[in-house]
Amino acid sequence: MSMNTTIIGALTSTALPVQADAYEGTATTYITFGYYTRPTAFYDDAPEHEIVSADIHLFAPLGTDTLTLRGQIKAGLFAAGFTWPEETNASDSVSQHIVFEADYLYETGV
Image (cartoon, rainbow, N blue to C red; front, top):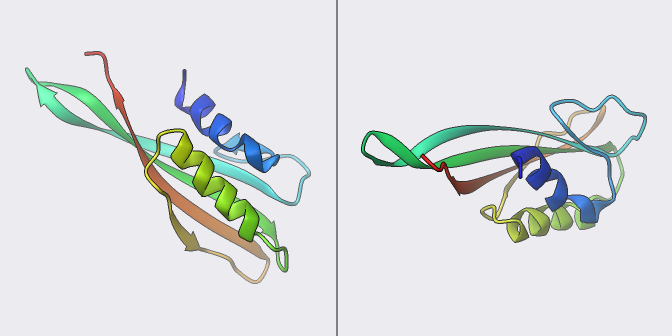
């Protein structure tokens, strides 16, 4: 299973559009995500695991109550094997923008 599939599956309970990198649809409330990886647990000069650090971005119009959505995002990621997400409010005068950061550990198979 790809990391994109894992993240999208973790967020299905929100019933929102979820898109890697950028959303180009028409919904006013949606989720985007990106991630990077770093090797860990080296054995014989090769990593046995990688840590995926994911950034999940919730966008919504100003004034929208996103408390339930934020809880669903955190719970969904945690249930999918991520660490409990950190949450940062990056909103501005145009829209709400909530950023979640969480890590996921997987075996490289090397």
